[in-house]
Image (tube, rainbow, N blue to C red):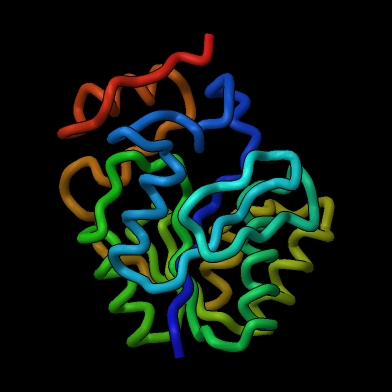
Length: 201
């Protein structure tokens, strides 16, 4: 069976001041760049977006959150439901769109260990990128989390109950997260070959 690549790109980007998936990098959008990085590892790549967001280029399919403003778990649940229905996949490599310095070489160990163990796999306390097995019991658990108003609705809350494995964090800055303009500009300055940034203001 295949491993499915999932790019989470449906966030509000409120701290960035605009849709960070559309930020320019290497002559393309950040979403297109992230799709290319994941496609270097996997044949099939889907995008998780909201219904009101522009459709991405370069993906094989777009899945939409069934619950709005519920964070990454909503996107993961939608992708997991679609993957189970599709029937071709036994695992997903889940990648958030806001890691502009991410490389395929960083993703491959997660993919290798996830496929071997068929358990959730991440780097240290960075719960994404994440390898997640495609299993109905994981979907049911996530749906319970989403429907519980008192739930943390965090990726960590799903990772540990299914015996997640935390690999040693990779060296360098590949997991640099960018949620604000300051973080984006810092990534542009430190990342090799990153295109000039865009300011939403």
